[in-house]
Each structure stands twice: as structure tokens, then as C-alpha cells.
Length: 334
Image (cartoon, rainbow, N blue to C red; front, side, top):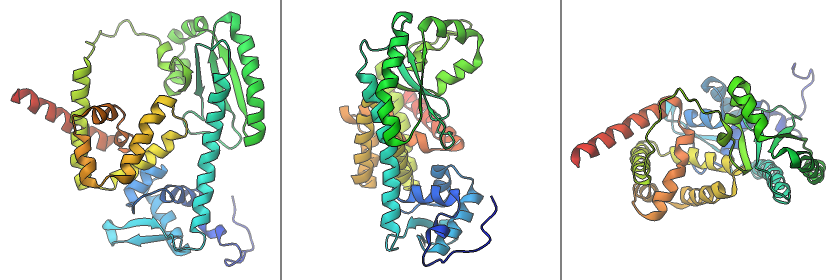
């Protein structure tokens, strides 16, 4: 898109420069909720931008005065400049954006909860589930129910969602499938397999429950709860060590939690809200100690570690390598 031929007044229309590019908007969205200044790498990952695009957008935001920088060269950290006269309004705008997305998902869950009888499963799939949707692209809701109830269930759900579409200006497509239809399509259609793997559960059985089972794959031994807890503890210990070297991981994890809360299931929401309170209030030392605590609460929350969701592939590989080394050392010590 070519820029307008005539410039507008920077005094009367400062948002033209502040919101000049999508990259700038993405960075402001991240910085509006950041609890501490963030480096270029953390910002790039949180905003899903390339580092070069991140640096370019940061330069524009610094020039506009809405972002402040701390440190120098490679040690630079960036934060929203709260003293800017538009900072609070911009923050409120992003809060309204999150509330709308949350209201959409809450409304869908509420409508599904009113169905009787309850369907076998309901999930969100497609571009919205993978967070790659374009403006105006519909939310695709798939209902899995028996053939006898499927048509009536779909009609009732569409009726209950009509008001939500009008109120929040969204389009919601509801489609139906029977378990038998899924079972017949999945073994021969890789597209369906990919759909289920990227879908997000709303109610009933999770999409993974319908994935085709590969009979040629070897059967793996089922790990006990104690083994899973020890594995999670070793992973958390590696994260605690990483936190001591890179405190910015806390802000990245908090941003991940805020984004996941938008469409989490009720059970996951409870865990995420606990993590949000911890990440907001715990000192770095207390957080590191909590990660390796063997108490009931820490053991439970280690099953949903938000730090894993913000690591790059290289960081995750290094972390898992450290975890494996820790488990081997423990095995030799016992």
C-alpha cells in the first residue's frame, strides 16, 4: 500500500506515526503488558517478528517518543514510556482488544454449555485456532455428535451464537461431524489429521482423542505419575537456572500466559491464573525456588510450565538437553 501523498499534522494525528506499521502495533501490544523492559530477542519472539523488523519498528517507536530504551548496544532493553500522554489510552485500547477476544470465546463456551444433550466434542479449528486468520475470517466451530442429534445440535448452537456475532462483530461458522465420519476420513486424509492437531478444545473430548492410531508404531511404556513428576521437576530446574542468567524470561512467560488465557479451557484457566499471579508477584529468587519445590502446589503447576511456550526451538533443545543430563546424574546418584 502506497503512503498518502499529503502528510497530516503530527500534533493532531500522532497515531499515524505511532501505529505506522503492523510491526509497531505488535510491539506496542507486547510492551503494554510487559512487567519489565525487554530485549530485542524477547520482543521479536513475543511479537512474532524477525529481529530486523523488530529493530526497524523500535526505531520508529523511539522516534515517536512512545517507547523508551535502557542500556546500550546489545544490552539495550525497551519499555513503553508511561509518561507519554497517549500511553494510557494505547494500553486501554489493547486491553479492550483482549477483552473482546475473551468475550467471543466465553460466549461460545456459554452457548455450548446450554446445549442439551451435550455433544461428544466441540472444538475451534482453522485459521483462528492457529492464530493466522485474516480480517473478517470466520471462527470455525466443529461439533462432534451422533448422527441422530447432529442436525438439531448444530441448529440450536447457531441460534445461540447469532446474538454474539452481532454484538461483537464476528462471523462464526458451525459445522458438524459424526465420530464415524471422522474415523473413516482420518486414516486416508492427512488434511484432517492436521486439522485435529491444530484444533483447540472447547468442550467434551479433546481433538487428539479422535486422531488415527498408527498401528505400525512401537508401543511405548506408559510412564507413572512419579516418573512424569520427576521429568517435570528436572525441566523446571533447568528453567530456574536459565532464569538466573536471563530474567527477561519472566516477562515473556507472563505475556504467553496472558495470550493463552484468551481461549483456555476452564481447567487450564485455573492453572494459568495461578501462574499469572506468581509471575506478577514473586521475586526472582522466590520464583526459582518455587520451580524446584516438591510441594503439592508446585508439583501440580509444573505440569503447565508457561516458560516452555516462549522458548525458541534452539533454546528448547538446549533446555531439554540440560534436563536429560540432570536426570542421568540423578540416576547415577541413586
